[in-house]
Length: 463
Image (tube, rainbow, N blue to C red; front, side, top):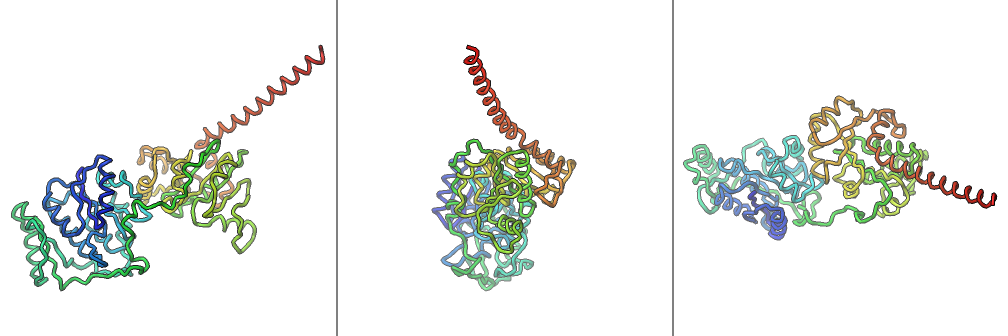
């Protein structure tokens, strides 16, 4: 696979190039400005498989020239010999930005943003091999109208790029004439080599937004964001010995991960096991649950509380999972939306990985995106609340490699319905059995010791 890395940060590009080459992926070139991109694609019309485009490419000083970047990409997309080149966008801007909406309208669906699909080398390469689906990218189509933008997205673009020479040139001329000449050339190309780089930018039609440093929500993220230190808690080297860790995540917010985690913890507790339920997210739901249980209207300061046979451990910045792992047979982690959880690594190394999902066909893209954010996807167990076996069987057939279970609808998670209990019994059967055997083993050892004592006493008494 032959790729081009397009970003104004050459340091970032060189570091990424090294990582791609380690993965046996060829980087044809690194371009650091939008004009160089035009030249680069013109010189390699038949050898480019994909372009990694970072949204800072058109940056000059403090001017990010986002509309210029959009128009250049559009013109490349419209050129016949580049129509099969796959673009992957590494965005310094969140969902709702007009630039991403324009890229979406061009048929570009590969986006990496903060709190989106995890940007790793493997995911990057996969985006070129198997581009992300239309439904996964739909969220980038909606525009936040509060973000300043040069034009109404429903109006024609005012900048076009015409490929007619080997070097880009900037010309100032009448905008109407420039666009008329360009459209004529695009509609009747003479030969493939007519599409070499030349840029015509009608200056009078360009009014670019400025993004002052420090203006909330508009400043770009640093160039090293891919390689920066994660907020994930450093817990991956904490040994989990004799403790079964069950991670409960969800493919999207508000699907019932907390209810499911409580229900699983209650099932384990009812079977006579020592269990902790850890709030592995920053939603602070456990504080509210604790207040409701105690009949209080204020947040209680305690970091943990016991209810219904379960130790609930609230999220705190200084929480120590090492201590939790040494005190409990089972630890259920309520991770929720994994994109925003500092416990992502803990989910990846959980003994049982439960994923709360929806079986609705129009929400399947949530599952697709989730699978790109976790490791060892073959270990995942999907749980679908308020579902039936037919619906989950259909979802399982579509996924092919994952087990899917329905969960009975219930409003009180501390009361486990019979059908849900059967599901938990199924997914926990190995670990519940092992813990049961350990208990039985202790009883067998005690019986053996008592038997030996009785035999010894009998020998002494009768002799």
